[in-house]
Image (cartoon, rainbow over all chains, first blue to last red):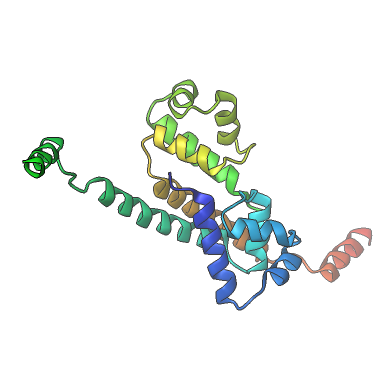
Length: 104
Length: 104
């Protein structure tokens, strides 16, 4: 299952790094604990809506932009997953035939 | 502050209703308690990533589509908020002048 919190964490970290800012700096401005932001960025904790709003505000980023990036990443992963599950797999009858050949 | 959970709840409820499905039906298919889904739809509880994935799967909706709709709603609310905060407000000096006139 694709987890939104992982992709959201990736987007927030990329945005922070592209601004050359530290976790400590964003944590202080957003008034969110450094440990919590760090876990959110690593996709280990869900961000509450209030916390997400505060982080986006500290990064001077509209929530809509962050969610649009998350949506784009989701679409890419969904497409990759669809390609993966539609790959042809060898039929069991063919596998059995190969084993028979090897045994012979 | 605009809260993502409120807009996410709106999108999920609209999608469910457009499919003519009940909370009970989606709850059973997603294996998420009816009370929890109801609170998510009303924007009263944050949906965990696992729960959101299960609800979207039960609604046969890609997560990317739901998040894209949420992003669109966020953009509309952000624009409305920006218009609201940029409205001209009467200067304090003018208000004082009006009060003086009334008193006179």
